[in-house]
Length: 233
Image (cartoon, rainbow, N blue to C red):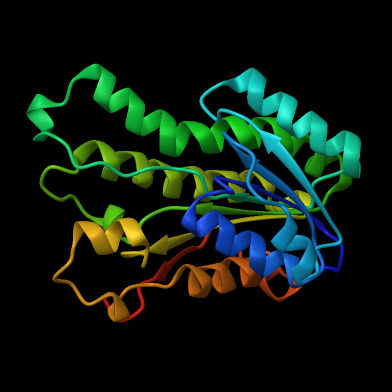
């Protein structure tokens, strides 16, 4: 990425979102942090961010997303990099017991959020014929697993959306790729799996480094990749 690029990060107050924001801040980026609630912006400025803007928004609400993007454009004039970090995980029922509400929630949270933010951001990238988009899939979504049908389907959709967007946008100077993390080392995962060895999981900072690479000029020839990031797991 170029110094002072404008980087929009969704899910910016989550474990991975904070790590991604920190990685870009250290590169001198201008940050637009999208989350339901505003987090502490001070650390990113101390780490070297050229500017930081908080854009509270519910990613399930298209109008709220459009307002957040408009706020970023008003402040910075453009968005150079979009990191669709926001999403969620939930174990669930067997596939034959999944109800419409549970199915819709997972699809909207993971795939729908990518669609809504991309709808608001991509036209500006097309106008400039330049941009980088990095989505968050899941390594587990490469195959089906019991009691995870809705989650895996939603993350599989993110992979297919990434590939489709890359095919549509590559000739306009826009790179679209996604990362496929295995278990991320977060306090929540440590609590949920106390007997596991988190040293084998993926540190948020390590995943952020991969995202930073995909947003950089070094990844200019990469389009539609779904890059596994699994640590030692």
